[in-house]
Image 1 (cartoon, rainbow, N blue to C red):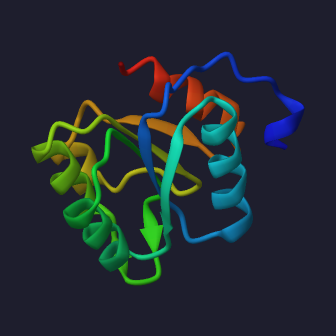
Image 2 (image 1 turned 90 degrees about the horizontal axis):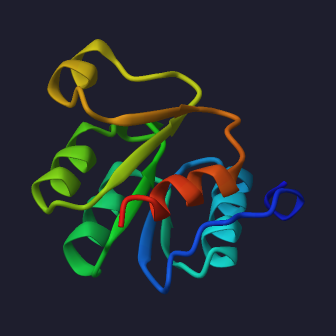
Length: 126
C-alpha cells in the first residue's frame, strides 16, 4: 500500500524507530520511511526489543504500535519522551486511559492510516 500513495515527506536520512508486531504493517511503514529518505531502525516487535534499540541506537523519531506481545508500550513512550525524540502512535486499539493521562500530547493515528501519511507526520516534526 505504501507504494500506492506518494509521500511528500522528506526525512533526509533521519533514523526512525518502528515498533510494530504485525510484520506486514511494519514492512509497509518501513517502506514509507525509506521512500521518504529516512533510515529504518527495527522494526521492534516487543517492548523489550524497542527499549534495547532506544538504549543502543541513535534515534531521531519513532512510530509505535500500542499493544505488543510482551505488554503495554508505556515504558517505550516514557524512554523516547525523556530523550526528546518525536513519536507518534499507530494503533487499532487506541490509547489506554492511563497512557492518555500520562501523555496527553501524543499524536495518535488509527489503523489503517496509510504509511506515507505517518512518514509525512514524522517528517513535519523536524
